Length: 286
Image (cartoon, rainbow, N blue to C red; front, side, top):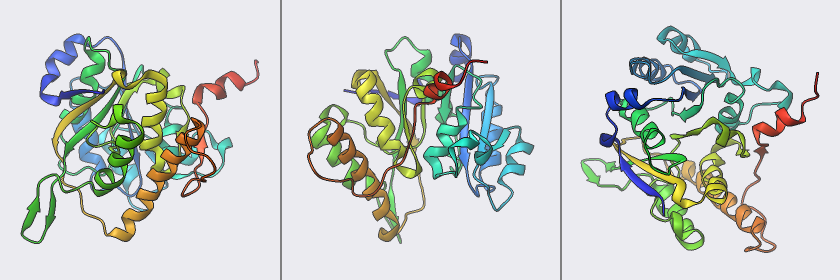
């Protein structure tokens, strides 16, 4: 079973005192000029907790790159990283390509579209990695209310997580069933761990990463950290269906690899980037 923490267990000053490794914060971004600047500023204000703030911009049509740079981030275009891999393929591809520019020991991935961003998101995700726990991979969880008109349903948001991801995990990977937001995009781990795994491209990345790391390090080395409440804009069902299909595709693909599902193709095609460290090992010696 995954470990569970609360962000309040990891005050900033204690983390600064215990810090022994360098940290990179990676923000994949596309058309996030309204939010990315304040996020970068709040991460930069953490007293040196984060050593590198890296924004990977997916050719934004707005001022995302300029706003992020003005706030103090190192900004690189997604297509400029590992260009030999061809066209960019969404969020998972951006997360993977970012590893080419990461300079630090620990990596925390942060969504660039978060409104009312709190620095506790960063401190919370890093806390278990600084602690004496056995955590090697930390994943965000939060309360997701659902509002419609004047009515609010506690924890009624995150419909793909609650109606697709969690039931499938409970059925096939019960040791991960206690993860309340398995599709959260904010995660942290040692850079060397991220470099050893393939990354699914697009929005399949969260579930694919979770299952790959479960296979490699086990549920007991996975932690979820409660980060308070998250209020995201609710999307219509037609926008949620492709997300649900990508979750089903990843789990089906994994079950086929494990020999537990025979003859059923994934619900939608999956594209993976190879483990990043395999590129280095395949490079010719000068």
